[in-house]
Image (tube, rainbow, N blue to C red):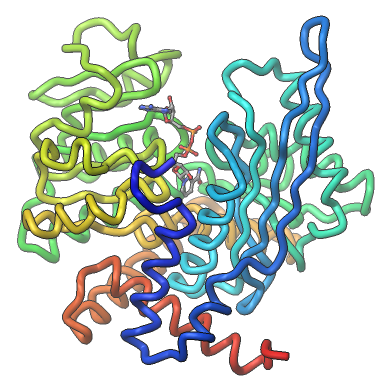
Length: 411
Ligand code: NAD
């Protein structure tokens, strides 16, 4: 995934080590906090055309120090054990950073979701659930959507779980509204990204109104981030999906794009390649698709003042250092895209209480808690004179190591 000399998991662990050193943690403790608690690898034989394809599925539970493990499930051809470990670990630090009572996990299936029929998708997620049901549950490990999966996938997962274990809607989040989903959850990640982008500009005495934004990805995160940015007064000047990108200096009408299938087909705009969106001149760049997209090969072409990481791990360690040298402020993934798991927390609590919130309450809580997380990270950055990513990891690692120690996790 990440075009770096380190693997994706090593990249996360490098940041955990740095934070642990700032906190003066023993090296053995840092090592313990970095390891994954449990890893499950399964095979999923799938009837395909006239043959059989065997897919590999994963669930990695990184930490339960602060609560049941929480994390999405991704269907993507580049999914492998290292990537799932990295993403599971990021969930541990993200949930600690925003102070919700969860640990970290992640799942995936190595398959190109765009090649699957709905029936195949349903069969895959049902098989995935059946094979690992013993480690799932609302007090153990709660999946959610990620790249290549959506609310419909979560409904099938929940249905399979119910068949095996009985009624427990809180066993998964990101469900459809008609099936115990929470109004506000679907937009939560993108909304959080936009809110954090606006707060970052304001903190640096920059105007939000008219500030140019370029967004890579027009899926769940990119789409809602683009809409919320437009609502906040930003000017969205470029967007891309896997098929291609569009750009317009005067600003793109995001709502107009909601009904199109692929951005490649949209008339009336300059067309660019999917990766070129990263090189557009703008104030705020939001990578909201794949990991490792800002790397040594293109970092010199990045032409923005702020990178707000909507995707997980979009910036490699080396590129991050280069951006900092160039004076670009990077708002890290574990803060910028944490609105999704914050929203999942609201859905989970509502399911457990069998009570639902109106969307206004959801948005108000989300905005207030994201603003608090943002303020906490800025305070930490000042305290240690470090960049925002290091500060976010210092705060998260401190909370997890405190919980780890207090509950007697060492044998
Ligand atoms: P998604 O599958 O809904 O959308 C992914 C988007 O990326 C699509 O528009 C796709 O066309 C585009 N894309 C794929 N490859 C591309 C490429 N090479 N160039 C340009 N665009 C490309 O996925 P999502 O849920 O929006 O997740 C996007 C990222 O955000 C992932 O890194 C994910 O881990 C992270 N994330 C998602 C959530 C969530 O709640 N969905 C929460 C936190 C973080």
